[in-house]
Amino acid sequence: MNPPRASLVVRGQVVVAALPDGIETAEAIGITDGRVVSAGRDREVVEAAAPGAAVIDARDAAIVPGIHDFHLHLVGMARSRRALRLDEARDFATILERVSRRVADLAPDAWLTGRGWSEASLDPGALQRLEAAVGERPAFLYSHDGHSAWASAAARRWAGLSTWTPDPSGGRLEREASGEPNGILREAATELVGSIAGRLRGEPLADAIDETLAELARMGITAATDAGDYTDASGVGRYSAFGDSFSSLAELAPRIGPRLRLTLDIPSDAIAAAAEHGLRTGAPFVGLRFGWAKAYADGALGSRTAALFAPYSCDGATGSGILRLEPERLDALMGATRPAGIGLAIHAIGDRAVATVLNAVQAAPPRRPGAAPDRMEHAQLVRPIDRPRFATLGVTASMQPIHAAADREAVDRCWAGRAAHAFAWRSLADAGALLAFGSDAPFEAVNPWLGLFAAVRRQFPGEVGSGWHTEEALDPVAALSAYTLAPARAIGAIDEGHLRPSARADLAVLSIDLPTLLAADERLATAHADLTLVAGHEAHRS
Figure: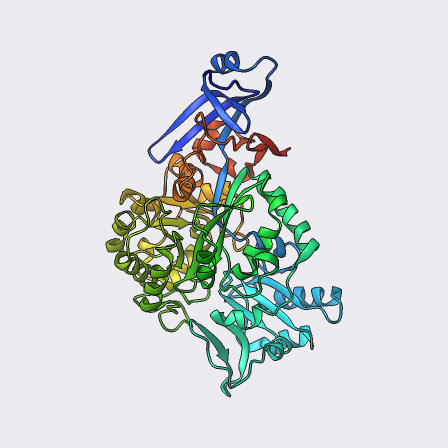
């Protein structure tokens, strides 16, 4: 049987595949029925195409396999478009000013919701001024890292919080000397109020999702893994048992599927429900794809709740963080997911949490044949002794390079003496780990070209100096591989992440040429996609 002939030819500087140790290129590719059918020299591809085939001539532009953001929060991104943003608020006065302006624009009975404050900008001794700014309105503001939140007095009353409310397992309520909660909630305690806070839903959420999908397409992102929620609470509609984010996105699958290959994670609370429905990691689901079960082994650096072997060293910090999952609970999760063919995606940032998770994987029953491997989310501080265990145990290192650029000063302050073990991409790769990169948006920018710059330069564009701990930097091709081929390997999608014949025709025509991309210099700051195709169909055109 003759091979299919291309109905569309795309010419340019084509990256057919970015491998950890090299790059495959071509002058053109041919596409038909949503798949690549030819790749090679321009003349050969054109001559093999069907008569009258359409041609996209990208000239000197780089053409890359579509980016797969392996860790983002799509519902959070959409809701953040409508909520109060405090990421750029560098001091408490700015927080007060922004809160006051937003309160003035809201209906009297509306919740004030938002995110983005940092430990440095929120003054715990002046929270009454924040209470005065919101008045009797319920207000709930997540921190920048999403692992802490502030809830107003009215919101705490809605949730029934009082002096007698105990700290939940894996969480903490900060308190006044009297024992009364002061509004600052850590880790699992955020859900005491977060589960009832006003959330964008229905058509307003759908509109915000549409805007977010357009933003992803402008960046050349054709696939993503939604990292899911803390709990299975607050689900909606037919898929409510799988939590808020999963159920909201599943309801919008007809709007999402043609524009983004989306994999949906579930909270670990929903493992039994997923197993009952016969769902397994990597399987098609309502036009999307069923992902991993998300669990949290610890907190975050910004909230000083990442679980460490040695105490925090920054001013005012005490203790060694919060281990949210004890070994017994991890063992139970492994026992539940293995027979169901569901992989675990376990958030672990501190070195103690990382080691605890790896110990649990090592002790777990073997995975089913063909089952997707477990993932560790973030893995920001990894002891040298634990690095080879990722490859040995088959655990994917799901990491976000932009965190290194954003958090390096906090690492130096709070993980003193351990900074050389932070964001150890090169050491992990050299030890055989599969690195799959994402953004953690909306907590950081979704732009993968800023992430690629951070992976190579260990800083943001425009900053002076040679970068931070550059011995752990990746070369540009290895970084691009971690955004394209590696996520596909992690999910077991052999026809994604590259542009070889038979691959899905997901690609981005960039605003820069291939030499610029491979230089990974300051010019990446303005890089974007001029054209994005998903299954050969246009998702974005500048």
